[in-house]
Amino acid sequence: MRIISVLILSVFALVGCGGSDGGSGNNSTSHNGSTVSNGGSSERPTTEDGGQTTGGSTGSGSNTGSSNTGGSDQTGTGSDTGSSDQSMADEMLTAVNAARAQGQTCGSTWMPAVGPLTWDATLEHTAYLHSSDMANYDYFSHTGLDGSSPSQRVTEQGYNWKTVGENIAAGQKTVSAVMQGWLESPGHCKNIMNGSFTQMGAASDTNSGSTYGIYWTQVFASPK
Image (cartoon, rainbow, N blue to C red; front, side, top):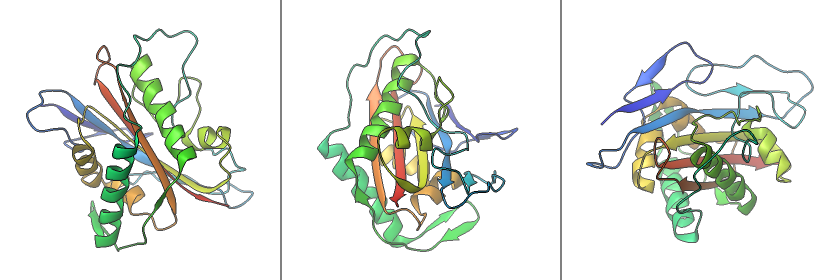
């Protein structure tokens, strides 16, 4: 099984991070997490130590981000199924909060236990739009086909945020598999363990004609 992890805006790839359902034979990949803080009028430099943090955006965010809702010059085969349903939501939220309650070692950094997140329907919908877009248009990136970022899409859905983060992955068949991959990747793990986040949403979507078959998105945020 080939497992690829890509660090956004870096010059190297991390091989072996991410996860997949054992024995599935499908490619699996995960993209290191992205975080934006909306806290002032000046932008601080981004950091590339596994995730991204940008401060001082004016609301729409300024780091590389996630997807739009489809490019007009692209063709897709359509999604087979979506899993932005209540059972997936419950399982994902339970897994994230279990990780946050225990504390985690994210790469070489110990992240202490933090409080639980609550589920937000707007963030879930934002995550589903991104997963669906990647599945239908067969790409894998935080950056949308129109250049949009995670924070921009959250803003477009009407969520007034203070901090936004995103994890994406592809190829994993279950919540447990994708969570394992994210927790084994420093950037994703740090997003999951980020104490500044208070809410989350997540979704996946599938397309059997796409490269990875299934695409996952987690969106984390704290409201103003």
